[in-house]
Amino acid sequence: MKETLRLKVDPAVPAGPEFESAMARAAEILRRGGTVAFPTETVYGLGANALDAAAVARIFEAKQRPSWDPVIVHVSGPEMLERVAAQLSENARRLAEAFWPGPMTLLVPKRDEVPAAVTAGRALVGVRMPAHPVALALIRAAGVPVAAPSANRFGHTSPTRAEHVAADLEGRIDAILDGGETAYGLESTVMEPREDGCVIYRPGMITAEQVRGVCQGTVEYFVPEAGARQPEALPSPGVGIRHYAPRARMVLVGGGGAAQVEAFRRTVLEVAAAGERVGAMVPDRFAAAVEGCEARVFDWGRWDAPEELGQRMYAAMRELDAAGVTVIVCPLPKAEGVGLAICDRLRKSARAE
Image (cartoon, rainbow, N blue to C red; front, side, top):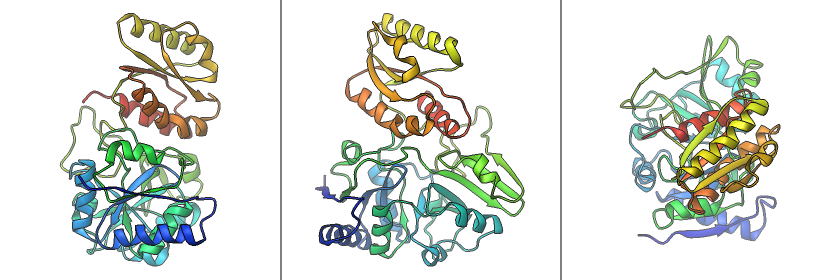
């Protein structure tokens, strides 16, 4: 195993000798074909030079990621985008202008220079411009587009802190750029802008309602075929059948209102009675439901603030895993707005292998 360099920076002060020194060291690692984990506004990414096939292969090796799962390329501006994208539709231009830098990934035709491994052999490449001072500074310093899926073992819970990255990838990657906790905690919205509309492959912090205000034509969701197994190449990052999963088994409780709270309480009691070590992701409105229950409780946040739930979701899974629980019981929020992205991640994390 290799030694993983740790570089700590303050994203609130993206300047000065210490910050610039850390950026220079991390950028040099990327330029020479190495791997660097770095914070974005969504989750931590594991980066490598997107135009270097050998470097991209090191991402897949470190994450134990299958070749059929494409990765997202991060750019710092229009000139770098031109090195990756062969062309942009009018809708792609409109979306980039409206939401970049920010948590939106656009699937666009790739240039030949982009290695096939980045796109799992497909003609479209996912590209985004992150809205994080550390991510942007690193990409600019490296001077190359950076391929970066989430910085975790494949299929595991996404990392929102540098220590989450280290828990999965210490000794497997060259460096971790520690910029503190990420702001959103949910991966980017992934979509394909077409001339006649847009297809959302993965919901995220930028909602369908926001997209409809910008995209010309219809906005639809990609729905995988019922009972489908993993294909030879996924059409987009983030649409794997099982993903984002903790070690513990996830049990989700749907519904709404008082009935959902009661179902949540009953589920926690039933799982505990079955001899499991129970963890519970508990929003404020569900707190009374777990009083007196044998469960490790994570204070998930305000039920009426989905952005807060999203930001804390992966940290909750990781903390409960670290506590040794065997089952995590979690209520499902309303599948609308950001809540739709939360439900997407929770349902994928709960799927059986």
